Length: 453
Image (cartoon, rainbow, N blue to C red; front, side):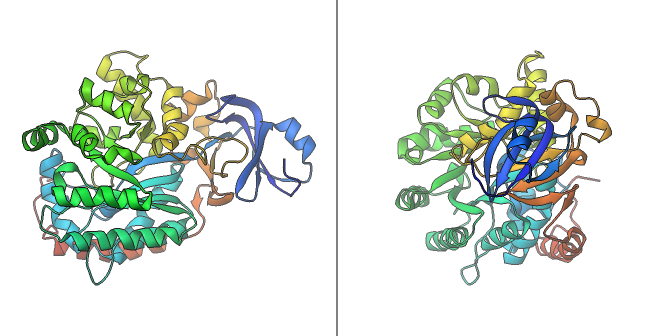
């Protein structure tokens, strides 16, 4: 234990995502940016009587949630094109918008979505920004600037693809600009983004692997989200996208695959063998009618599976608590078994499971001494949490953003009493509106009939 002054964050229930899993009338001691100790309130208060106190005797304290997949590039085009399945949706919305996203749109869009993430308990988010890069002015560093301002951790990537003819060097330059921005940031780290196997030529795919190897970077890729993707790659390469990644050596670096819905027995064996993390996105999978990820079977095979809110255009809500709840409910309705995925299992996926999927479990994802002090305090005085009988069920099935009281990232509050601390949310909302109108107009979508009438 440290002898320096600290803060005791108290809760009626402290859910650690470690051992023991739950402490009744417990506390987490923060010193600087790290967790110093976790234990009973009486013990820690006795040892550190002069520490400041946060939280309260009826609150619930949890690790910060790990959002394992999303797209800040979609932040300004929410709530439209909801009649499409994935491939139609990409053509109708994502592709027309991508050329008109610039650094300002990346910065302000990240602020807009990042605030929502923080207010639902997310403390680290794995992002893939999908845009057409501009050689004269990199786009994606705007994401890092916004994350730093918000006090939100990021694993940041650029979703590179050259199917529309973008030169490889232009794409590599965008990767380099984002990697440089992340290296200069205290809160962000870089991964190589691969939009999808089918979005890259063989030459670009090989360059992506080489970049990841040479820079010791991880990879963030969409994998087998829809049946059409699997069929197209099998026709082109003779194997599934997962098989192609294994064959070409992509899985030799740390990889997280988003979705993994249409995975057969052989695909699942390869994911387990190569220790590929999976980002499960239940809400966007339902909205886009993509299917149901076989989460229980992936977990049984020892695959690290986390939860993602996905992009603001495919999910719209950037609410991690909604995604956690849907993770359990989707498996139950798919299998017609109430025991398909428990509240505790979903909670673990949202915390230490997501950290494992991103290879960050030694640093964050649980409340343990030595880890960064990323944690969430849920308001035990709120009506929804007035009577907590099973704290895991209360967080997974009952709580929403309205019950998130405080969010700590690296020992500092990014949310206090439910409000964003470091930026003016109203000012950001005002700033976002003309940018969103500009992007939609330039994309030819401002007056388009996208099927939402």
